[in-house]
Length: 543
Image (spheres, rainbow, N blue to C red):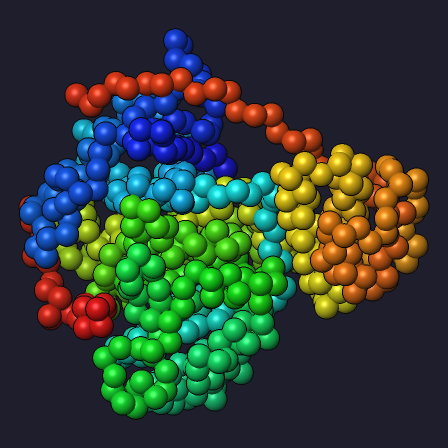
């Protein structure tokens, strides 16, 4: 699968510049490191008008076209966008990613999901061929693998103060029931509303794959650690308090008191704890709430924070979203996601290089169709543009381990956690200038543990070779690695272990990017929208 990656970078003059990072397209006379200055701002016309309650007809198309024209000023970026449209297809998508610095995320404030082709008026994100998503420009270099050991485990938290969670539960459960998921599924549903709990309990009485639990501020992290979900789904309120994005969840006492606000808050540091608690099982976080993807000029969004915390992908909303739109998105996104997982992970010992951006297209189309004819509605309303997908820079892969092997499921899952820890430790050590001898030794162990996972068996007597250098068995630089490896059966033998025959060591460090070249060229039927009062604004009552 080919991706087009447009990289935004802050500059010393407090402006932002962009260039084409992928694919390596050559344009005669244009240096590879060429940078264009981003001339558009979210707080000026026409972008500032997106905050209006009733949007002028055609505003979304106008904004999407302006964004496309801005990117197309850069010759290599324009060539990349054109290639994505010409060569991409639903079977072989060429998604377009905006890679944004998450420390100073000014370009992140623009609604890139509205990107619209000049002339034809086609919105890229409404089609699986070349949808738009975002990459968090975080400091990471290792491959990300997540092992989807059946059944597919989804931790569902439904707890928005003053909002009936029943439609969200039905939307998600209907998507599961409509997909013949060969992996199977297991749901752990955490709610605060006694009425909703009774509804889920009725379903659980007929479906042993469902567990139900009352949500409290003390049991959520424990549930993540115990259940080790592959997907975390939140339906709650979202807000930005000061400059800090938060999730706002209601507890049982909030529901009983009919409090308009929840008193259980989650922020980025809590999501980091969830990532550690889930070990390396979770590959997606869905924040189906208001403002999960909202960022400030100097503060990254909560979904970007999820990815920065280590989750391979996260989805959230740029603005407040209507309840019915949130449920519609849930129903159709999960319908697409589950079908995708079923197709790619149907066989045991299979692997899937995940590309989630195309899976949002059907949900976006449904959010348009709700308001009238697809194209005319898309140009006039913004709801379909609100979902934002963030992913990590490095490739992400899902692996379905075999059920019959010489390694127990417990050892298999623990071994893949060891592998990921090794990869992360090596990246950190290399960044801090660790001795090459130590890095080479870690490379040996990375190859060994990767091979063990791919063969699904732990050899009783790993072959021994002379170590690259005389190193202590328990170096103080990486205590977590050695402790984890010692916990796996059979016991880890230290530096004497070697890679199995045929395995290859990780590649050398990538060379530095070539210097950037400054480039300062400048840019040369309405559907009635339902009111927030008639449909219920997800966030309005609680902010």
